[in-house]
Length: 617
Image (spheres, rainbow, N blue to C red):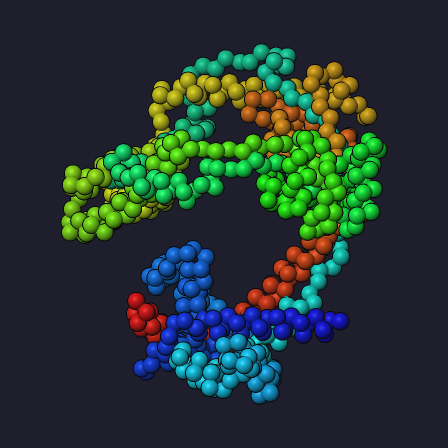
């Protein structure tokens, strides 16, 4: 069984790698850079050729384009670190190729021939391998047959080695059991809050010396952060929205395109419970009609949750042949069995969403705002290059504000400020790294706006004068005295408890009991550290937890071990086994790749890389 699993993994990985290889080759034309530069590095005696590096880099750029829907230039690829990522992958690949060769792992010519016949791009009109098609495809991408077949041979041997490392790894049962116990064990506990009204003693009154001592001891809280004096110019779509013209024809076209948003048929919030056959569906419907059961009970009987039956809001056409029956039902009723693609089903109608129709006139304002905003973004996008040219020609930000529609502004920025332009993440990122030597450049805002910024200077952190924050210091000192007094009061109460005594026995008002709480539960009224504290107690023990304006007394009542027979436990066991095995396999693979590189040595020719990068600009 293990051998079969290993072969299956090998086949899957092999075909994936072969597919990726050919996709990387396709669509880019000739990739041979020629000249005297043939390699960009080597791992041991396995070279990383220029062609292989360029193909892999272009394949990564193509994948990025597929994800974003936007073209990716070579400059953008380098800025994102794609070149370094590709090079690192190739180093790992060639390290494994060398190790596989050293171990004598290889496949014969017959296996390579079989693999070639399976590649769709090499098949002729009749669906079988065609020698001329094969040769033409490789000539079109600038690759020789011998080189391609050698790469296939390397892929096959490397896949055998990878499969040996990745397949069949498991963690011991005690590892998973420990995690399950930790995740699913629960606690019963009681808690009560003591606030200022519960104090049995008064609070001291501070003089100036006491407040100054508190101020000095907590000076970090009364220190202004480093601020950066930044001048900027910016323009956003909202700034020019009123100046953008949108004609009537464009509005009507937009209304027609979005008609589905403005004319919506009646919809219903529906739950569906499907059955394998009519008999079982009829029996369930009969139980509901007689009151013997209800929809929730029948869902549970099927071993499902209500979430599994929820269809959301649907139209009559969404339900096909069941549509008429469901749309004739009253809200809150169960109808069926009705025919569906999943078999006979019961439907519960939870609510009716009436048909909606918004006329063009009623939608005009919304359409106008949307179209104007889109056009404003395009107008601003067209400003990018001219404004950048002005800055490159020596114009200052003040000049830009005077001669264009961009507006001038100034901000004393510090981490955490978010007023006006500081509300944009792109501005905050730039503001954090600006230096006084930086030349202002046009950059984009998240809403399609543009900005440029200049750092005028930096004010280092400095303590705020005591007199300016005296009131805040006094309030903070008093709050601390209150918490200290409440903690002392709570400790006296818990220290005086006898064995078996509970919080309720203390006569405190507002004692709350919690049952079956796990480590990840949320408790209104208590901080996240409360459960962490509770899980560190033994049965009957208490703890005092300070809060911003009160203290909590916690008492652990009971400990419940994880129910390993529950559905949640079984699901978690399987998930953890899979995750642990995957993590172990990845760690082993990483360790192997690193060991091979250390043993064989890695050489990267930076000069050759620079030449290749220059050719791709």
